[in-house]
Image 1 (cartoon, rainbow, N blue to C red):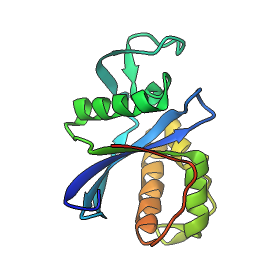
Image 2 (image 1 turned 120 degrees about the vertical axis):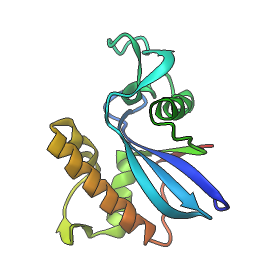
Image 3 (image 1 turned 135 degrees about the horizontal axis):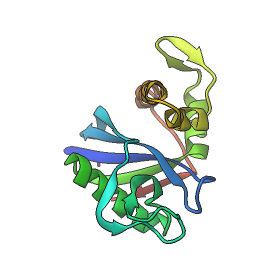
Image 4 (image 1 turned 120 degrees about the horizontal axis):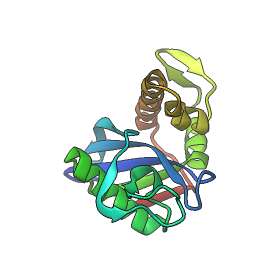
Length: 168
């Protein structure tokens, strides 16, 4: 991922919400030679898999939702997430990264203070990724906060995370 132009699908997930985590937000991060060139919020928004049925046990029925793609396991879930996003947005992911709330909190601590519109905030990962659950305005706020988080993360030279899953 450090060479050429690559897209990384970043899934923000809460491990406590479902057995392998539930996807609450997703961004496509475009890298140029390993540096973040831009990123696009791609979820939430009711995205479904083109053919995969919803996992048994979710009680939802119908096609698999991006939110529930990790239900049957992290590795297949990352593949499902990539397929769901590509089907719904036409954006291809060269790799998929899951950042759980514990990992996001560790990143927030490493780059703190987290600033949104120049104002220091005291938000947790759950505050950021679940903010989108309540309203369109909440979603816009969550996207703004997560975007500020990504910008500050890019400026941080070295991070060590124990709670990160990567698949390419």
